[in-house]
Amino acid sequence: MFRRLALLPIVALIPGASFAQPAVQAVYNAANYRTAGLPASGIAQGSIFSVYSGNLPYNCNQAFSFPVPSQMCGVSLTVTVNGTSVAPLLLGVYYGYWINAILPSLTPAGNGTITVTYNNQTSAPFPIQVVSAAFGAFTATSAGIGQASVTDANYNLNTIIHPLHPGDIGILWGTGLGPVTSSDAALPPFGNIGSPTLYVGNTALTTTPGLLYAGRSGSWPGLDQINFTVPQGVSGCAVPIAVEVGGAVGNVATIAVAPVGQNTCTDSVMGQTLVNKLAAGDNVNFGYIRLESRVATIAGQSGAGTSNNGDFAYATFSQYTPQTAFSVNYGVSAGYCVAIPYSIGLISDFSPAQLDAGGGLSIQGPLNSPGPLVPTFGLPDYYYLFLGNAGKFLYSDFHYTVAGTGGANIDPFSATELTSNITAQFSGILPNTQIPRTSDLTVQWTYPLRPSLPNALVTIGGFSYSSDLTLSASFQCTAPAGAQEFTIPAWILSTMPPTGTQTSGSLTYPVGEIWIGEYNAPTPFTATGLDGGVITDVFFQGAFVYYQ
Image (cartoon, rainbow, N blue to C red; front, top):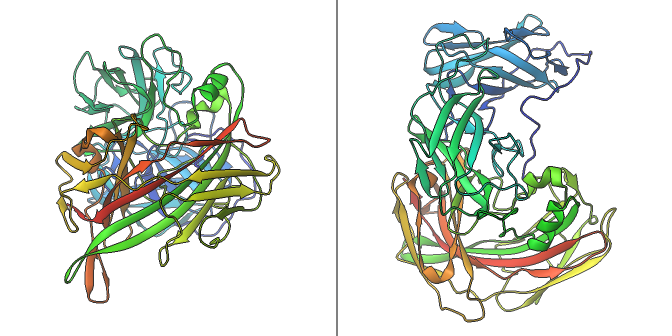
């Protein structure tokens, strides 16, 4: 889980800059932060991008006016491609290490270098790939995932308590559609750019009346907007939205869509009571606990063997307000898929207000406790514990209790879960299966229907790493368990890197997986300091495979 600062923070100049030589550490699309080397990770001509450096003035920007400058507080950038050098236009320098800038549209496409200069000291060249188009969608969390920065036609932010409806006009905000012919230092021209495909749910929009406009915002250079009509049949608190341009799909975010006549979406894991409380203008304190076991089959020299690659426990405790309802993010709605950086995982809490439940949460089950869940990533509300893979801790049909001794915001509590049966299993997906990243993938599974869970859902997921483990991405889909079949769209699979290999002893295996699991029905728990909480579990089964 990650939190990122806003795209263009308004801050005052603070004196006291360092005079050491700056050094470029990373370059990203300012909206989606795609790691260099992943699909759609190039920096598009005319787009807004971010440079992570060091030894820069702490905070420096201008009151936004035109022309946009190429130098600010002694800081400048130079991009050189095929012998041609250009000066990006600076939007701001923040916190001593972060620069936001616009890459001029006239920058040549190709592999080149970027340097940062501050107080006449220039960094070593850092590689940059310039492309004609690579779209990144801004997100309300400023993390490149979760709720997309989508507004309605009146510029109200889309959230679970302000959903769009089929037939409504939405506006997606991002950067990277492509270059313009006029100066990027001035107000951009109005007009469509390129031929993007907008995916909303499972619908691809390319022309009117679905895709209405795709070009510069008209209010600021580098900032793009895509106006679209929400397709019929789309519904859910977390419906995927993404853009394909230049043959590559950027980040996959979500929007909230409700049936016509409803004022909120209805499938949030928070439950309708708490969603309605947010919609009524109240704050909501919510706790989420999940136990997770993942077992994958790996192909050995003499056939297939089983590898338990992880039992985990997670917990988050968050305060949401009507103004931060965009940060409620617990997966994807039924019938859809999202793609996310694998390092973030399948649970993310982006609430600005974090709730302290204590220094650690105990977990008890049929075996000895493996140790407490402890706050992770430096956040007091996000607890994590790797329960190990040498010896399993989580088993089906046992009671597990997660308890807290209390913290600054939440009093002592106890939440008990009876774990689910391990039922859903893939049919026909074997270890070392080759899965094309450019084609739809229809998966099938066996599942004994249970009258007690007529609306049960399965979660299908996977990840892919490069051989050197520097590139990774994952996907998550949710589908009705009883359907026993689901198609993962090619545009989702295309966001992952080709799968590499790792070697253990004499065994070489792919560092890619696909799995399926059924989430148990959430069990509510209560605690003073919370308006509600749930504990759930999931047992994933799958195989090590190649995404190619």
